[in-house]
Length: 131
Image (cartoon, rainbow, N blue to C red; front, side, top):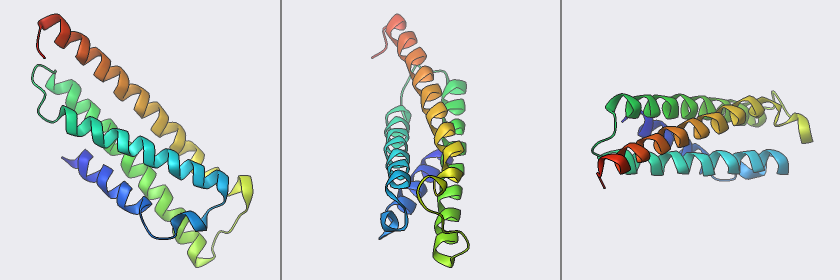
């Protein structure tokens, strides 16, 4: 449940009015990546919520990975927004998204790990004949 709450929180942060206007195009593309990945995580959590036959430890690991990635991405995005609004940090072009790069990489890595866990779970379900 904590993972789902974290995912919804990220989506709400990204839904703030005029957020895209604060960022230059390349950074706005990174925010679009955050949104797409977070929506993927939301879908995964909704689909695995009541799935029988999946190893509970694997699901717990999957949820923890998603929760951590979502929390970290939201913290970085919120801090970046705060700095821009307060005028603490106003950088242009390639420099503006520098703080977001490590989080983008972590989100991408987490998505790959989640996909791997789901692939393994699907193979187990197919072998056991569980739909």
